[in-house]
Length: 94
View 1 (cartoon, rainbow, N blue to C red):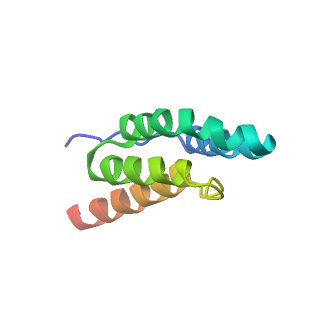
View 2 (view 1 turned 90 degrees about the vertical axis):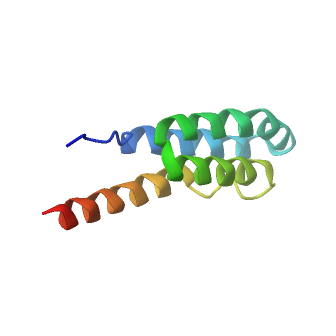
View 3 (view 1 turned 135 degrees about the vertical axis):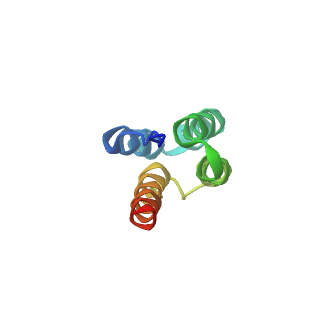
């Protein structure tokens, strides 16, 4: 049986903190989100892949672009979802 890769929780938290960093500079922060949104979406897809990566990267891209939504911990939520799905699959395979 193939073991699927799950990114580290600490890396996910770090990515969410980087996304929130734009709040530190009020006006410049929202402009930096225009640059960060596609980078973050690409990293998200590469980290999670599959259906979680596809849906999550699109959601992450939109979340980073819209003002005031940077507080959503998209990477950490995806980590939790992936862990729950993995544990459910392991239980169903027993």
